[in-house]
Image 1 (tube, rainbow, N blue to C red):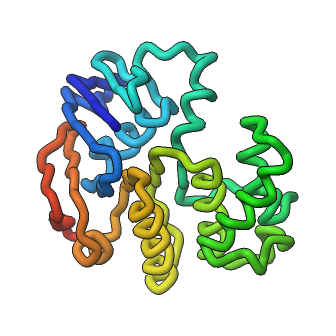
Image 2: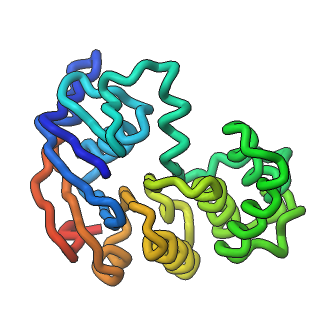
Length: 228
């Protein structure tokens, strides 16, 4: 599903955030990306959805090389990828339903399919009963659930999550992780950057550790491996 081969990312200020990365992630895997602050995790994640472009090397997702993909083709490619952020990035003037539906409207899904898909997805994340509420009326955990619903409503092959529990309390973080596990159980590939040591050590999945822009550890059912 995801292949990186000899990937380098050098920024204009001289920082090298990715240095010869080689990685293969299979369809249906759940992968944690860990490492100290400034290690290159965010760059690694952002290159997967073409927020950042590699300086050299190839990044292939579902057969498409993101390194050479024309900018005009990026929105079409992103239909295969759901992205969940630490700070939710919800549209504050839209209801829960409208925030999730928006993800389908921008890809021109047929209107008759939108309501069914949105309500089924809100049911999956436990928010069907709050469809008419605004983000400001929700807790942080509920807002993150809306963000997750928006990322998966069009059934992407890959969900990429960048510190999705970073702003949440411990109990809410476990609830969010249960949703990600359910998404993964249904066949979606999940790649998650996280600093949450307890979650990584408890809900076992593959762990990729990055330091200095290099992959220093890649373990099936690995541990976090750092002091948090």
